[in-house]
Length: 143
Image (cartoon, rainbow, N blue to C red):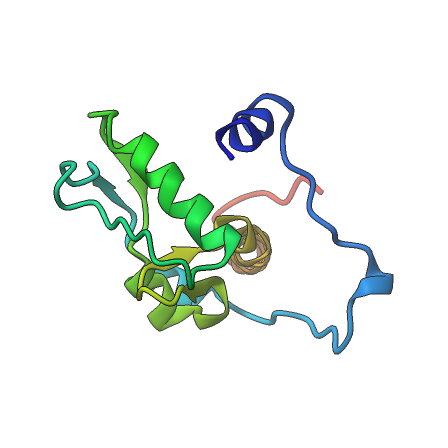
């Protein structure tokens, strides 16, 4: 299992995104207000005795691999940056999954479209402000 994760780190990760595999496709719409509520945090993983570990054979292969990966990560005592799954789930429930043991996981890649749409929304706001400022003679419009 560990080799699979190492390989992904070395060569990148490609995710299936072909339109032919998707159904019920809808635009995300405006997400900036939700995104502004999301809190980035820095953290360290808890010590060995407190990291979730489960040898329950009812877990899927992915769930067990995730727990095994956590087991490897706990040895690193470095500060990380991310989100709390509970916070993400309250704003974007479609980006959080929970395994049978109750551990929550964030689909960080799924945040990319939210970020892109939010940047576009902000750019619309900036463009409107620039137009207003130009109209009032506060700036010169150099389009």
